[in-house]
Image 1 (tube, rainbow over the protein chains, first blue to last red):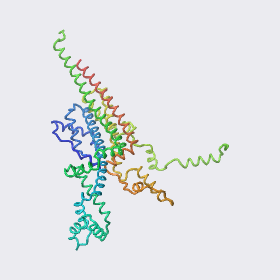
Image 2: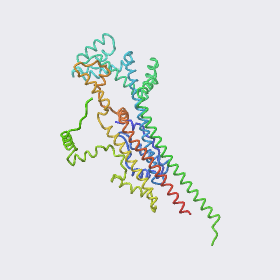
Image 3: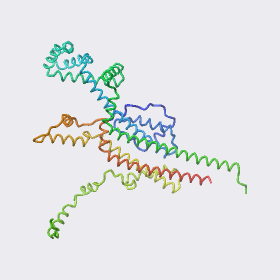
Image 4: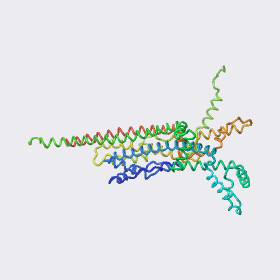
Length: 268
Length: 195
């Protein structure tokens, strides 16, 4: 399942030299806790980037960086889940909207219906009539009374019902349009926006509806993401605190050594 | 009101005989099984009481303490190691729980219960009027997939996940203070060396 996790790969920049050794050392703490479908390479990369940024100096730093990476991964997981849940609902609502539009405006999917019908006929007609599938589809597709009568007759002969086929064709076209819209195909984007504008709707309407329907899930997932983020921040703060302490100790030692060199104790 | 009399000897003897007959499983396997009845995830057990985990503490503590550490530093390093192993155990338990639940083909007890309730109502001699929506829900595919499944698990297993989160929070807190104590001891040690 959770294939959505590997959808977005973190951009891979070269890690600092020596980082791979640290990452290898971090892997001693056990395998990363990934869910099915999550990208192990992306996790490794995240760990490498944190190592490069924080440069661990001892095993406690390693532990804290490992934790920060795990918490960050979890926060990413929950944020992606939230986004996917919303996206799914929004696209479902868009598909329903498009089905309605296709129902009221046959011209929008006339060509698609012809192709769809030809495909059905090719699969269902007896072998000797398969060659005539395209012609039959062209004759039945125009959506006139005469053509509809013929369509009903042809579909009846192969055990199908006209309305069901029309519904399925609309659903298939709407699905195709939604997929193209998600991929950002210009023609689909323009058409969807035009249909939405003509109907006095917008994507925001669907987003608001999805948010209303999923608000409990979103809230719960948000809480999990916040917990993971605050744990990640706590780990990073802890590393910084240890660095500051180390810096202070080093400064004090240097001052003491300086003092001893400038004012050497009197020789006995 | 019914007057309560003294329990008769016969009844006492019968109660005792019944009690003797129901003292749980008799076989070794049965006894071993019920011994784990109250064990849910075992996260409340200290790391030291689990041999497999306590074996991991010492090497990690040695690495944290570093070579030539004195006894006090070693003890503090052991505390850090224990907290770290405990934290890892809690995280593994939560991860395993999520993985196991995600791998269940037909997940969602709540939805399943609601479906059974609707179908039972429909099978009664005089079935009530049921909305088309409810009927569609009852006959829909019970298999949840993808993000919906994970979201449902987070909803239905919230209590269990929250309990595990509490263990994780405690382990994190223990480790934080153990690390601070260890750092402080090491700092004091290096200061003493300089003097």
